[in-house]
Length: 614
Image 1 (cartoon, rainbow, N blue to C red):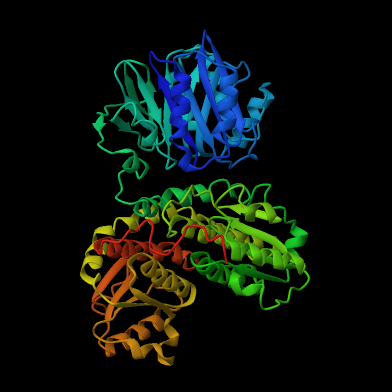
Image 2 (cartoon, rainbow, N blue to C red):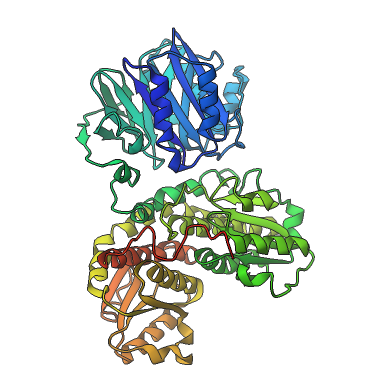
């Protein structure tokens, strides 16, 4: 997502800021900007689009100064534009802020500021923070004192950095909750901040990583650390030995492993700002233009997606039908336009795609539009073809996926489909307020729950090492986790080149049982949900045929002990959200088997990230 850089020291800040932003381009962005302290004032330059646009402005207006901050933005509140680009400044233009994440209570904070006469120039949630700082600085406080007065009042997940010409030669940076990281880099008579290591490696390898709820006050000579309640902290710098590629991987062996571990943050980012806590209603931004009347008139929804996105579509069908009671069907995009599909009045085509450039998905969208369907896309990449041709767009906000095999985009798709199903149900009156509140409350636990699943990685790695020589795998699921079985098998095929099959467990008697013997590992997704007893019966079929059972089970399930050779435990959650948790150990299993076999995990043979041809 957004990139943050900052510098304070004896060198000219502007070239260092631009260089740092260049090294963070891989994170994805739609606008960029810098703010530099110069002769007791701030010089702010911003531009929509790529860094080359900002570079042209910077070149035309060279600015000297030794303290500054820079930012690349991926829009969450407010459309991509120069007006909404960071940094944002206060009414006097003397204090600036950059921000990664979302301030959930910005509207409540903004109202009294507007009443006092503060002028807001953007559509963003970010700007409220700098006007709050302006209020505190007017009381004679230093920048760090003002920040410590403001930060505890911000709700949500945010990483922020502030500079002010009223308190020159200083950067205050903070990390609230689970937003993107903040790193302080230590140089010789100069110091840096950044959201990720590539921006720092050219200058230093001595760093401190801020944890949630921590603040850094950075000058050229030192950095001091506090909790957001003002309690001082002692944090010793550590030396990282990463090269530039390892830094982009944040120290993980592969991008895929990094992206698996980024899922708590990615889920947090895709959730934030999409629920009105006051009314308990799901809200999407201006990219979703569906009116309540149009939602009530929906006659059918066709979901399309390729590969992993197709498995998300299968989950989406269950979510929408169960919650919103709208009939849904699933189509493979590469087949859709060749079968002369029937499109009825009031039909919506929901296209799911990480890249937004998948040729078959785009062709299905074109065919549906020709036949009269409204188009909505669930997509990760802003400005992609899918986002441009659709009538409505829900952005995943997961940040770029570098590994070919999708992980964090898949779980974000599932969370957004869950939100969309509730959105439809609320507007059609298909769900009461109490149930929707319960469903949404459970979703906001998910970053923590996925963290808990990731802590099972040592167990999954041991299983991978035990079974990495297998020639075949079978994945079994039922109900909402049948697509999870398909996705688990796909991940293993993509990465390890082991033949793997996913199937609905109730279909085993219709042919699949012929495959089971003592050499076949069978992964059964056996969670304590509405089909738990049925799944247990299917597991007995495997045991009766000497298959090797690996169960994904809830951590409170004692009954399953002894009924599988291996058990991976995950937390209990709302049934319709189970696929988000259940897929994570399957991603890890595929990753560690492939790594153990010595495969190129990030770029599997014969595959590409965006399939732009039929």
